[in-house]
Length: 274
Image (cartoon, rainbow, N blue to C red):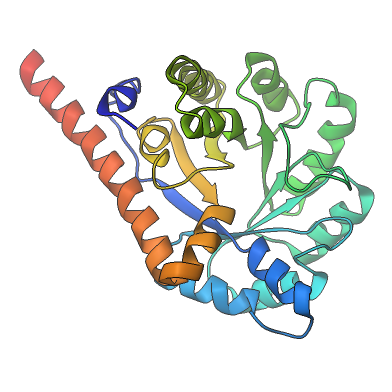
């Protein structure tokens, strides 16, 4: 990715540090392929936190294809870092979340046949369903994020249902980067920039994730309004070659470098304009 792409993010006088959430689902996928207890998602969570992760994300799917109920219980009991529970909008998942009381829940669309989450939640089409669902989670002291595409309609609907945050699905942006499709890449990055600004104006905290890797993360980490990235599959895959600690720490360094460059550019702008 070129430096020109990174410059699409606007300067901001109050650049905040960016949190890194590590999704440990695929550690559980490896474990479940063979059965037994190894590799252990809890051990992966511990290593990730030691390497610089700020929180741990786990998606408890309805079919329990990777993370299982006992994983959530163990992660909650260990309290290694704030737990972000990804889940579908179902009565079963609501009951589990209210009982477990993770730090946060991210509500995502879910189909049994999908390999991974394929797009954002249609919040605008489910306001009646989501409003009481979000309210119940918040009554339990749980912060609520909605996994959406970066679209004004979905951002506004997220505000209406009472969410604390939105997490932008970055899949299209990452696909354009992988295909080396310059026009599409610029278009998708601009959608994230515009969406992040709109969400921040609406009073929503802004997160992002899905498909991010070492080559495409800097431009997203350079968007001032985005304060959290959740990354899993790529880092678990990279860990096969370099180890989980090195995999996570390199991502941490790239994110921190992007944030520092953003702060530096803002300082330079102030000096030049004074």
